[in-house]
Amino acid sequence: MAYKVLVVDDEKLIVKGIKFSLEQDGMDVTPAYDGEEALQYIKDNLFDLVVLDVMLPKMDGLEVCQQVREFSQIPIIMVTAKGEDMDKIMGLEYGADDYITKPFNILELKARIKAILRRSIKKTDLQDGEKNVLKARDLELAYDSRRIFISGKEVNLTAKEFDLLELMMENPGKVYGREKLLDTVWGYDYPGDVRTVGCTCTAFARED
Image (cartoon, rainbow, N blue to C red; front, side, top):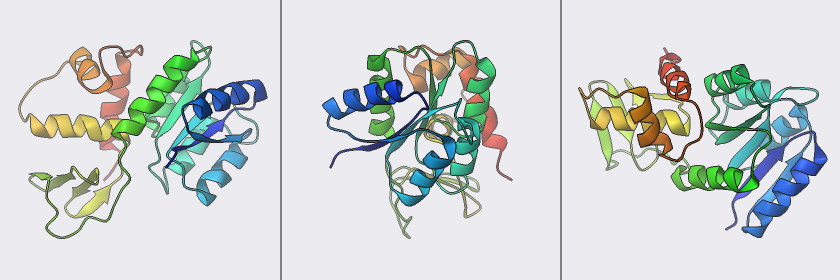
């Protein structure tokens, strides 16, 4: 089945270009042009990924991302204006999985989308006796369903947060610098800032 992607931007030419390019790779693309429309689409449909611009009419992308995280862990790539570092930081804090800065190369965006889709496994019910579970005290990480539990209570993490926690649980006591974490989890060709790691790591403390 084709991946279903929601592309949200109030600039219709940008949406048209992204839609055309992703459809060339066999993806099913739905366009949206404001925050309220995007949020309703996500509530009413099952998408595999959302490309979400920060600057949107009616409801900005950060608010959309924050509200989506209240009911869904769908991967989200935020699109920010050039030099708007705070938008990138806030997007990651609100639960975005990645970001890209305008103006961007469509090949870079497609590479990011494909990388997230490869790593993203749809959640399934955690069954008793499920194999491939990593435990550390009251923390459980289920590899197959990519779910995290603390004292039996599920904790919602973004895809990158899960990858970071998985790495740390598999290597207890090992110290990682920001650049090493960026290389290991995001990849050597990741063009973002090393501060991305700090923003993501702090997100582990969001849950009580």
